[in-house]
Image (cartoon, rainbow, N blue to C red):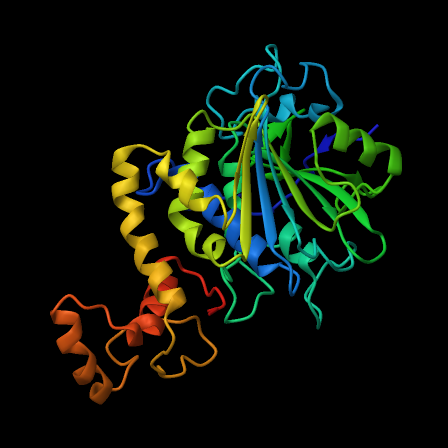
Length: 376
């Protein structure tokens, strides 16, 4: 039976505790929910298949659909959570069940690549960079979130720093499952344990984790965690015991605030759901969804949506300087001074010239830290 394994550390090995979760601390300005939505969706957009609309589904089990106390997905985990030095001062009990958050994407490629890869090699290997690297990424300069830290929002969103990844891809083996728990250097049975533990098939030396590919185990996981995914390629993330801050309203607001533009242009749709409730946000329902939010939120978002809609419909654009291989950046050198002299009078009169369309989109891309394709 598969159980959680934290390898025993060798004598003389440095004690180094993970710190990347601090990037997504609830003390951060934008909060944990904002970070979770931002990182989840930006990786989905990067993995989107050409010509398809990406879809992301957020589903909270709540207490009613939580896993029971005794379940195979926490086998061997609790002794590490409660171990000396784990970094969890007061780990929650499983006695009342194990609630979870499910995040699935569709219209994407999934975690491609050889799951046995253990070091950098030429070519793209999503699986290797997702599971076997921290602060390192195989993404290119013009892709979002290329620093390789975004995935750490998943353990940071869990009260027990634990999550699973279930991926379907168009290569063999087609379906893979693995779990990761991120603690600190801790002791179990008088032995120091490495901070990163895995729910996986571990080699005889207890050192290398390989994903689960057994059909029966994969089918059970889909059922137990209410996955939509059957044959569609993509990635499903399950966060065990999510932080109380994370709720449906927060997820929906973060989605609308950060990703209204790709939704508006048809690049993205998002489902936020819980038992008995499901909200679908796409380009057809976006306006209605925003109109049903509270007055303060509408006052924040509607002006930005209005100018984005105007920009999308503009018939002509101003060419800006090529940003090169890096992500677009808004600065005074983006547009030639001669063109700026022509545009300033209209802008100062409160007349948003249609020629500012590209400039606006470049600016909003910079704000959202993304590089969405610009569409007419």
